[in-house]
Image (cartoon, rainbow, N blue to C red; front, top):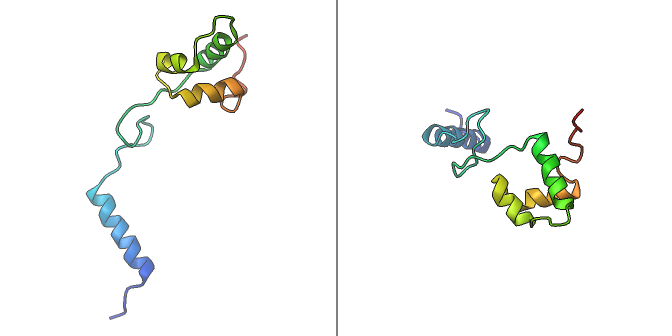
Amino acid sequence: MARESSAERTRAYRARRRAANPPIRRPGENIDRAGRTWRLLTDDQVREIRTRLASPNAPTQAELAHEYGIHPSTVSQIATGRRRAAAPERS
């Protein structure tokens, strides 16, 4: 009988682990590894965040993050244009 290679042992181990621990997230679900759902912002919400941050009495990024149920770094990335840089304008 031929000896099993390291790659074959690894594949077999991973297959056993997948069977014992099915993934929490299924395709199409917005759930992180801890089982919490995350928010997907619409283009309107992104525009509203940018507008509110540009206003004279702007709330803090942390306050906006709490209000929209997103991470504060997401608000920062939206504000600087690193995330959703080109949210389409409404016609």
